[in-house]
Length: 393
Image (cartoon, rainbow, N blue to C red; front, side, top):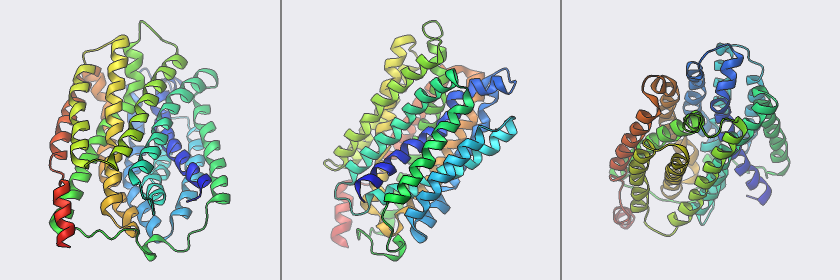
């Protein structure tokens, strides 16, 4: 993949996560504009976007393998850009629910299509995944910063229109610079030829899906809830939306760097103990964050996000290491459909849970989710299991 298209693919990852978090960042302003008294009552409107983000991964992955990944990425750039502009035109909760659902359907294209596109032929997949993850999480940081500033100075509708136009421009650049595919990946030659025994393959895929589902819950609750949580914890310190956005962007920017470090480590050290070490620290960190406030909470939540973001590269690394390139998009699509659909439940429940139990109870619940994730990752086959399977094959 030439340099400019690679950069545009990483930019697309930033845009993908940015679009999905604009609503959560601007929800208080949107609720006021729609005449609602509480932001929690509007938050379930985003559920459709995250459901489509998950379910859409299956057809997106299938089309990526069978129709072509370059073509699907063009659909992504233009589709998500136009649908974001459409969100800005909505006037009621029902309208914004439907528009966000369409945006979520286009956002589903990125992960099962672009990441296999970047990984094809890579000699250091962990490093590639780490840089790509950094880009995606910088998009989360940018969502907090740009949405906060645009809401403050131009209104919440501009927060959807501006990145929508950026995505359309990036799509034009990608169309002009990305080389055409000689054949769809499913009709070409795979980059690797790993064939695991059925029992080991099922166990690996099961751990991959289950751990990704727990990670999706943690990711969606934190990235969708941190804006309002920060506003609550800093009520007596900072109230300006732009400043709060900058603080949250700083948290995400620091946390995003963890993916680069983890990606490089994946290429050098055994995967299971590294993965297990990261998810187990999440339990303690979320428990500590639930008891903190003010600047102490900001430090604690930064550590939480480092651990959450640091766990993300492992599932893509397992796909890169154990799945042939000719079917990576389809396997990724199935894994993402399950994990993102589970994660979408977090978006639906976030408002009601906070309304009834508060953020302290929510963060203790996240510590419990992290504990379940730790138990799941402990079931991942180790390097010795895979080495024995390769010798047997």
